[in-house]
Image 1 (cartoon, helix red, strand yellow):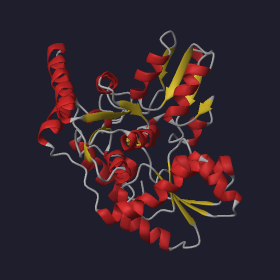
Image 2 (cartoon, rainbow, N blue to C red; image 1 turned 135 degrees about the vertical axis):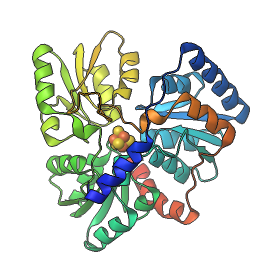
Image 3 (tube, rainbow, N blue to C red; image 1 turned 90 degrees about the vertical axis):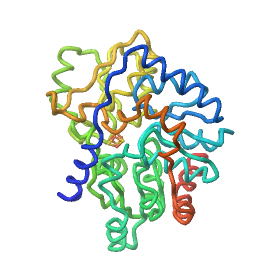
Length: 344
Ligand code: SF4
């Protein structure tokens, strides 16, 4: 985090992310039927992130919706004919969907679902940071607010970050990177680019521990270790594969190993197991194995995407994403730059 103030802000947001009460199978079925009916009646489509609870991902599949990473979600929303997009994920994902589809209504199960990277990168502070280095190209991760994206030259996701930064390095550009320091360091080490890093972090990935992974490897010596680059360097160093959610999913399917130790949010296990029913996926150990841990391999904000909240947003429309038109216009420039770079 950038400061004690940011840490306090994260804690304040975490306090609102209370664990959802367990539903009985009958209650679950009731809400699932209700949501299916309402999605159909409103001509709305459900777009879910890989880290959301399994029941939400299943519902997205069953209703003709989509499961993906943040960029794939926004892309799907922009191309889908539905006028209402229900984005199950965290707030910056809803904002990105709105920026790419300003004419559509974007609803979320709760606007309180946020991200420690977004919280730790205040737009005004970031603008001041950039102003200190006007000669540098500003590259920001997708996990930022629309206001921060509006100040960037490029927006990137973890699946494309290495390619974009390598491209900029070849052009002799120096870079400001924000907000994830671990991902920034990984890109810096991999590309050799001249980068100044904002020091944000993901509260989930920051908890993975290299020693715990190595201990687990002793029990499962043939296991492949899959690591998301938001994890600390020591964890990245013990990985067999480092990559974005989509890249880790691909590795789980293509590698011949039967067992995998996975250092990313455990929500991804839903798709990994579905695509590889005979393989075994183990959570990488985290720092907090105790009952008080709020982010042991599962994002507390992603966990806020409950069936009840999803049903409520379909009727109340209270959790609608609004992005001022001027911000949309500004944030669209670096987002479109990424999209056309990817299409090349
Ligand atoms: S898992 Fe980490 S990066 Fe993803 S939304 Fe949660 S806090 Fe943000």
